[in-house]
Image (tube, rainbow, N blue to C red; front, side):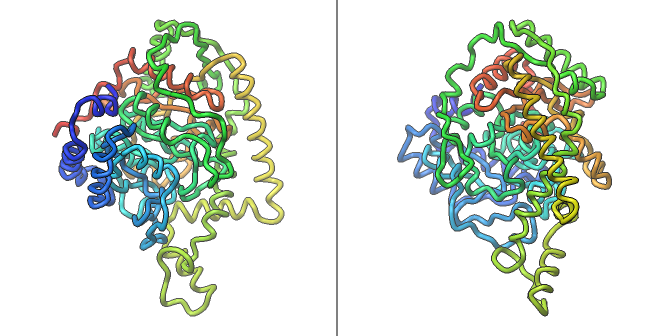
Length: 476
């Protein structure tokens, strides 16, 4: 059941709800390392505000914030040494919107450095662990957000999704992760990774809670030039409506990727559940999907190279005080402040943008990206939503892929396309591996069709029962 709806109807005070979640954080966070800071003073202030405004849509709901979203007075480091000591002087737009509806911000949660990663292992604070198996990763880059919700530390966490960073960890941790349409949610106050791909989204225990959070954080923002003026819909209202006749597209290119038998079985069962609910399964084609990983790892690093140029030890965060010149300051600060994956992506992006290589790499990638957008537009003429696995496996072990970047990048093979073409997507639990690890099903819809997306995901969630299980650590 939706935590938000249950909480608002229960009559429990915001103070009681916060106290119970802080106790859960105290008990379990040392084992999974989801939170990197708990902001008790600000939480207490927010509780007082929620009690003064009990009619807020999120009055008293505890929410964790990924470490790349700016909150006034909070240290915002993006999981990187180079931003240590940077305290945000302003709130991100999504933060203001949450606070205006009475939400209680509990603290910062861990992430891959600058959102560069699929496992939450590249953070300067150390790795976050999966609540289902603490020897395994929670996914990334929003691993702290997903682990916090899966372990019951908070009912809601905000993450950011540039290539699957909300959906893939949601799949690994057995929770719901929503990436809205590009431009649906303001990015003002989100520390940029790749500006044409980034989108803020919620991680929750249920589809209904994701819908209710989207109702609050979506909408135009004059502080973000890419923010859309498309009206915000009451996303939670049509949940529960029949999906009889809904056209569910199966992209043949996604089906060609080999899957472990247990993941394939969970996906096949998901198709049957949707069929039994009255949905019509239709084949579709996304012929340029095979290039998604290649396109993403040109476009993303190119934009990251540009965005991260500002972190030089002069204006933000940490600096090397032993530098002998300005050039030496830049060199020392970036050498010491950035981790291996951040350096890899900056170097890759800088190379692809350099003279003599721009046309061969970046320009060609953007042309293929346009072809991918055309593919999706044609597919959505045939289907209302598309489905595929969220990830090609369950959570892998900590350290298993750190020495093989390409293997790590392929963890996002199903999720990258939604960011490249700007469509909304959601991951919902659909089953479990032979080891008892969660598996996610991804739904995608055409731009700004979040109502259809959420209705389909909700109908599946109610029929599948996969979201009803919780990790053993939850009750420990």
